[in-house]
Image (cartoon, rainbow, N blue to C red; front, top):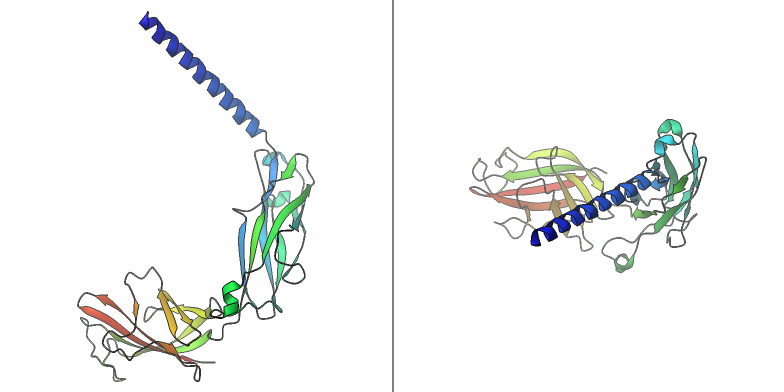
Amino acid sequence: MKTLKYILFFVLSLSLLNSCLVEDTTDLDLNGQGPSLVTFDGTGLVNLTVLANGSEYDRTIKVLLVGPTKFDITGDLTVTVEATNESTAIEGVHYTLEKTVVLKESNNYLGYVNIKLLTEGNTPPMEGTPEYETYKAPVLYLKVASVTGAEGVVNSGKLATVNLNFTPPNPYAGSYTSKVWYWHPSAGGNYPPSDSGEPYGGVREEVKELTAITGRKCQFGFAVWADTDLCWVTVNPDNSLTYEVDVTWSYDVKMGDPTNASKVSHYDPETGVIYLYYYYSGSGGDRIFWEILTPNF
């Protein structure tokens, strides 16, 4: 009797499994017949960063057709986009927008919404000011309002979140002559410095371009490896410096000179010269760098 119960239980289990498989297959078939959708590319999150110098900048946001019946569609699609009421970016103040885009069959139904960023009067506060702490970049929320040109094509309902990141002009960006003293304890070179070539490899001098990242932060080539590694310097409101080296560099770079506490990194507002003192530890001791960046502008 017990064996009969197990057999019945096994048969019922197979029956339930079979019904689930049939149901799942039916759902897949139904999903395969769903509509094609016009949507914004990726997650819909877009960061547009421009220098707020009074200029206007043309940018684009990608839209495309997706879905199981995409390859059954013929003819071009006309898509209308518009801002939602939740947007904090104001049309005509922060941006202008071409609200119509054509997704061409010949281009695999891929198109771009054209947006122009207006920076006149939209310079954000500089880092380190009280106004900067409460500043929020304007945000534009875009939706697909309508799609015409083919049956069975609808909008996905997904919004594009467009952050309009206006960057204040950076007075520290530009061309500099970099002069580097470099001491390597196990590879030669004497300390303290002189211009007679005592540092390891001699005194290195080259032109470096400091590129603005924010109103106070610049990116440029690291130490004597400017062609392969990056670093960032931020000029703080008190003219002190914050210095970062890319994570691709395998050593922990620290500020200062471990043998001379008077070597403090700083910016000289009178001359525009950036004084950088930094080091990292390796086998045999500390590798010490003095780098003076003199502006060529």
